[in-house]
Length: 153
Length: 158
Image 1 (cartoon, chains in turn purple, brown):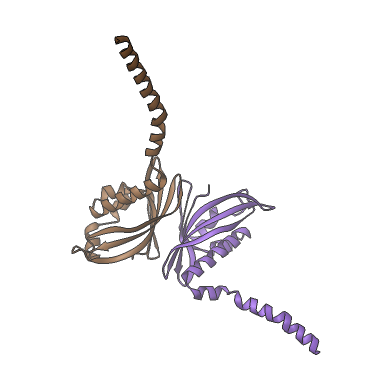
Image 2 (cartoon, chains in turn cyan, blue):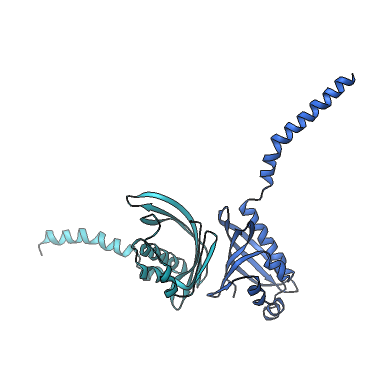
């Protein structure tokens, strides 16, 4: 390789390597502790929701799963039971993002996260922002959302 | 003279009526409980009933279905009867050495007109006043049918 080309590789490659080294993988985040693992689960949860990927969505949950919203408490005993009622396409919005996430309490196998999410229409028009709370637990070696209590309608 | 006195009384009564009309409704609004205050009051009653080992008073501080998450398990009590059958103060005290509990810290995390999330720390004490254990917990307090109650709690206690 000519000397000039090699220099170019170093100049382009070095920052890329630094950037990659600086971005922790999910495994690294897991090793960082329960808080990071819980936040990673919430990332996966909203990504699956936005992708309308029902299998990936339920993979971020633990069962029995509890959902408290409006004036209702819903308990889903299993994935199969939840899949029967799950409709990620419904709702009148296109995608959601986390506006705020704050670890309220944490222990080795459970993390409570207070969050605020914003729903958007296609084109990026916000529909509404809502507070919500997530109980995320480590069970059978996997972190997942066991319960959530939302202020969304 | 008498007429002046009568006129003065009438004027006084009218002023009182105006004052009542002007100040009464804002005062009533001030007296009205905010969701945060209602939730903390319910937690006070919850703790008082628990320490008094008064199951019925304790149930009166809950809303149903009531959810308890602890040690990775989810217990859902559909109604008061199911809850009543699921807990025995004497057995709990015998198994753990518990005598009474106290709130150590209570922090409203999120609040809306009909739901409040409260992060708490509570301490369990033995009969001799020594500390048995201290745990964090999260309470979801909701207003259902005009009444505030603890709908769900997620505790770090075993």
